[in-house]
Amino acid sequence: MKLVTAIIKPHKLDDVREALSAIEVKGITATEVKGFGRQRGHVELYRGAEYSIDFVPKTKLEIAVTNERVDEVIDVVMKAANTSTIGDGKVFVTNLEQAFRIRTGEAGEEAL
Amino acid sequence: MKKLLLSLTLLLPSMAFADSLDTGDTAWILTASALVLFMTLPGLALFYGGLVRSKNVLSVLMQCFAIACMASLLWLIFGYSLSFGEGNAFIGDLSKVFLQGVEKDTLAGTIPEPLFFAFQMTFAIITPALMVGGFAERMKFSSVLLFSAAWLILVYFPVCHWVWGGGWLGSMGLLDFAGGTVVHITAGVGALVAAIVIKNRHGYPSASMMPHNLTMTLTGAGMLWVGWFGFNGGSALAANGDAAMAITVTHISAAAGSLAWMVMEWVKHGKPSVLGIVTGMVAGLGTITPASGFVGPAGALVIGISAGIVCFYATIWIKQKIQIDDSLDVFPVHGVGGILGTLLAGIFCSPNLGIFSGYGFADGIDSIGSQLGVQAIGVVATGLYTAVVSYILLLVVGKLTKGIRVEHEDEIQGLDIVSHDERGYNL
Image (cartoon, rainbow over all chains, first blue to last red; front, side):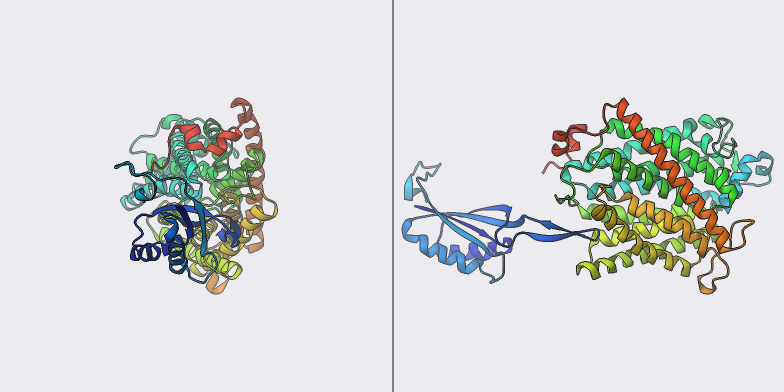
């Protein structure tokens, strides 16, 4: 199992959700986060003076998937979240040791 | 002019009997008193509250509110008497402490004296509340109260007497219709001195300390603008053409100051900002305040544009160049605006400027040069006196409250929890 973590622009959340639903991904966790990458934040104005704001608001998606589906999920997320402008975000993939479904007690891929 | 005449009638009871109550004047000053109180509660409180970080929003609201209460009681106990009692050229007397001798039907000019008391009380309320912006987000609440009270007694009451209570500046012919010196210069200079003494906020200027709620700030700014009609229009102390023109020029200057600041930001930064346009509004209003009863509409337009431009650069200079953390820019907006307006009042009051003409010099003064000289004396005297006394008071208050600044960790946590055990937002 893999955990796909995608940092995307907040306004792309619905597009990504719809695209993942279309390939029948069952669960997504979305979190409002802030951070920076190569974009290095942005500038804000305060009474005539410019201040550099390091952290830009983003949305973090966490998607637990089976090994067979991971490439497909990454591909869908990359396409749906792409605006071809700076700050589109990143996708990270990590190994997922174990998963459990609280209500039924199912474990592993059965729990996804 | 009216204020000067009124101060004379207060000094000479026999003259006061010459007037009878005017219901129109009374109705207008009743209204204006409410408008000026509305400037502080809730106007200034919301304006400042939105500008600080969310962890300090309650502290600013609380400071404005508590100062309003405290200033009101001080005004009753001896503030009014020290400001408007006969006294001498520098301070009033104690003849009217607790409003003794003043009944419902006692007149001050054509309005009841209790109403004049209440109207002037709202000025004593907003002036120390303005200073909150200088030391926001880091002063102990006990120090805020003690400093504000002492400052009212030793700075505001004397200066109010100098200018409006029959004191030396008013007698000299200083034109200050509604508080360029009495309110804006004193508050601006007091805030700047406080910012220097208490030192910069932790992280300033490298860390951005952005306003937490500019919608709140704009709401408060709108209330300030509306309330300012009472501030300047009410200072005519009558429902007449002086009040009408004062309100008109006040509005023109506010609009001009707003747009001037907006354009400055647009040119310099590439975008106009909400905070910019409302700050320009305050600059335009503060600057027209001393001039509002003496200048015409075209003069007010020049004053408003000048306010937006000059206060814009003053703000950048204080914050960026010399890096004094006058947190909410009290001095560059109110102080500089008050200075600029007091000086420009000496020019645009002239009846000899064609379309830019005003309504005449002070009695006994017949040229712009002479009037400007008096205005400059008013600016320097008020500024210097306020600076010295404020500095001494801050040192004394520091001794009494074991330091005026909260602990470093407390500042990081925010004053809402540290000083009041509350949060502005439980979301």
